[in-house]
Image 1: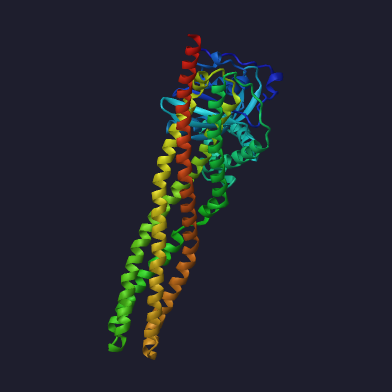
Image 2: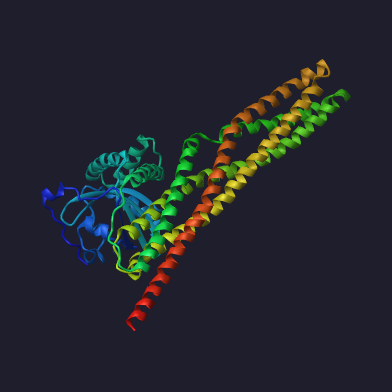
Length: 466
């Protein structure tokens, strides 16, 4: 199908299309970006009818101010099945412009995009960067513009596009939560069908319960300040401390072995220390591996909560703010949205359950390290007592005891923040998983309710007709 012509009148191109703060619009495409579905907000803002949009490439609404390298990045990510968030400037059929924050999700056979009105300061920053990108593209091409984009993000202290997406989602959705709480409820015409209204309200209630749950998770997660900790915490800093313990334990055993009978107790201390230090090092290596994996996956799981928020918001807006004549119409127009969201939450639940096991293991190993450290501290105290019996023992064994004491103090100080962070993460995930499971259940229940109530209404209408 040939794309419809967009009005190129410069007067229209300076005019912004009306896009309300609390609105949300959705489109669905195949793998080639051909539009398959769209909601009424999309058609109103784009000024195309749904018939005009369906079967047309999504770039029908592309604005000339958008850099090609941004779309290249977006397509590279979604082809790799990565959810992608981007600021996009679009153009309506009559040449008006409108900015969106697009969140593109992957589904079987294509993609669906949820878009909200961007309102954070990051949108203004993106606008400024896009102007520069257009200049670089014109002078040096798309590849150089892609490199320049990442340089610009790094100059802002953002080291990857994933990190940029998290910052954007955090700012934009927190503003949206605030606006959502302040915005007056929009009055929509009700259907004359009482059963339909009851069933619709039940679905809305389920979605609002889900929304409140996600909002609380976001609040708890941000209160934990884990992002700040992630940027600072690194077990490599005390991995070097751990390397010293092995050398220390070997040297203690060698020295104690050379002592006469008066040092026999210290030989036992040295051997006990060596055995304990081996257990400590083995646990430390397991902990480091688990901790590094936890840190890597934590960012993804954190981002999933924002994705969950925007999907529930999409469903709520679609069911509550659109006008439907029957449950059958509501079901037919929203089935693909509920289906896509249900699949997302099912996958998220599986990921959260797997992550929970990883965090649980990291938490267990963290506590085990502290236990080993306590044993080493006790061994140090015993060695201090035995080593102080004679001046000769003090001079020979004293430095080892001092080194043990230094090791315990340094390690305990380094481990204190890590242990607290792991414990906080464990508590957050413990709260998060049941919520995700409950939302999954509520959305599934709503889908079943769609079908059952549509059948019930249809049966009643047949009875009345007969």
